Amino acid sequence: MSKLSAFALFALAGALLAPPLASANLLTNGDLESEPNWGASNGTACGTGGDTGCTVLTGSQLPGWTIEPGHGVTVHISGSYPTISGIYSINADGEGLNSHNANFYQDFASSSGQSYTLQYDWATWSGNTTPNLDVSVIDTVTSSVLYHVNFPWSAGSHHVTAGFTGTGNPLRLRIQESPESGINDNTYIVDNFAVDLTGATATATVAVPAVNQGLLALLACLLLGAGIVATRSMRR
Image (cartoon, rainbow, N blue to C red; front, side, top):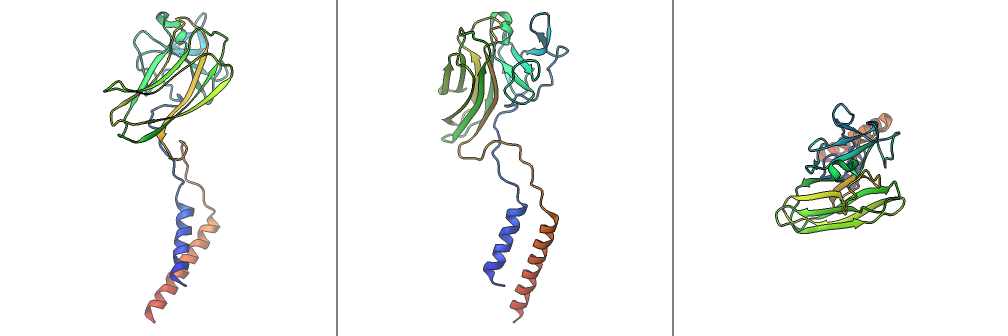
């Protein structure tokens, strides 16, 4: 067997056994599915009369995120109130807690000159056009604005993909209603925040693919045969 053939066999083995590559979301709980404080026993029941289909979280009750003092974040559960995907999504009105709407953020590390891709989903629920949905990425050291949008009300669901360049300082992704309505406006639902290195594969939890046992046995035989042939060739 030629060196080229042996190399091809080893390359085939690597392709079969190696898991696909995926980039890691730099955000913690970007999909908002980690909700240990959901429920009136941990957070605060929301809606008229203490509705149990949603929960208001404050402070550090949303894993990975910080909710500004005096503000709340309303978490919807699928089947009770509108969600975008998964079990949970966030209603950015924050129930109008303390006459404020949601204002929450997450800090993450960046490398100077590195290109990043930000993705997220948002949707409108009611026809209240008073508040806007505001999303930004800011350098926490220099206060430089690397990304900023302020969406007015727009019917339907929206997926956003945008790019920005790292500075080497910690960066802050912030989500809020600005201007605020200051009430339980039920206007914006948000979900699926992700920050990845630009050019990496899509963010995902990747499972190692199952390999057919018969194919593995065949591959093992081929590799063994290649080894025997190579050994005999060396002895000649």
